[in-house]
Image 1 (spheres, one colour):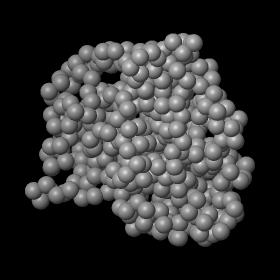
Image 2 (cartoon, one colour):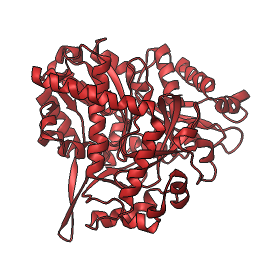
Image 3 (cartoon, rainbow, N blue to C red):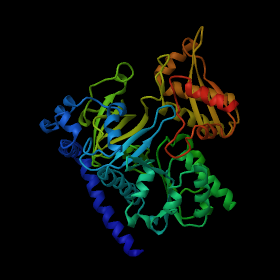
Image 4 (cartoon, rainbow, N blue to C red):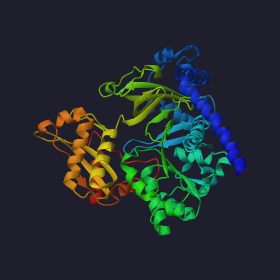
Length: 504
């Protein structure tokens, strides 16, 4: 173990030097990334079609290549899944991260070996590096990392095999041998397909392990941790895993869940480190212990462009700006080009830059998850913050929620919220008023529409029974780490489906 710690320490110092370089020279690093991407992409069908060989700089890159989304790239992706290669990227791709929203059809995002090594595995090393640099007395390598991941399946196309599944499962399956030494549980259990059986098996296997770190989506990690507590008949996770020191989390906002984890851990020594990862790539890591901002990771083989959000709310904008032109406190829709063959791909997420030296940001929402029926422009980060503020003052704990507009035939409209409480507020009416006031404080458009109830009435909040959202996900075959309850929707489709499933 001392040898492992020495090697790990050397690798972390080396990597920290590289991180400091891209923090100091961000534009140069992104230009290098783009040049490398263009060089590799020029050897593909997509690159030949769009004249990659003649592209000399970022301006030409954005001029020659139209913005893409999944539907525009889908024909090439589907051909790749069936065995054709060098269509989007210049190495063989057999792995596809299945990304599925609650209403959208499944997407199959290509995962190249270059993206595994240069993006996802680099990110894994970096999140450990940043945690250890910020915590010099760490004992992380004396125990195991409990990673809550998904599963994958094999596709057979005319005797050609490719594979699809949750990106976490793809990462676990392809991990280098040395990394397995620190991970738990064993691969057979970690990659089980049936979600409820997997959680039960994981809880059984990890009861007496020395777990020093956790990684996974907060909503699903809570389910696992509560099962562990039940099986050990313990009051806190600290009683089960006394050496636990960090929880690496991402996938959904941590804000509504923070208090629940604080109570479950019952320990001030557990750190929370936020990650921004997706099927399409790994984009950000919290690099400062006392801040929930994330450092934009610029050397993972991903080139970034940005669209100011106000341009995406009307007609989709085809004009992007590069990293050097972004400003703080503006919501931007992300456009990425990656070392797995996603070219000028509109990710669907929005971020807000909080610092430009180095580039740090917060996730502000998704371009498809907002409510703007009445001009209120309500974003997911507004909703998460308001929920947390109302919980804090009413001693409530929210397990899950969603919200949608109410269309009035006459007079003003409203927002309807479905909330499942882990612990109900001590004063429900006060909770609702706090929710409303917090939204007003954060969002001037919402505040203006709420003035005198002219456009928007006060929120309509409905408490739904225990496991409402879990049962809805299960009924729709959406149990697993890649599936999340949509927080906001501009239509009532999802909200009505949840209400209906609750009645059946």
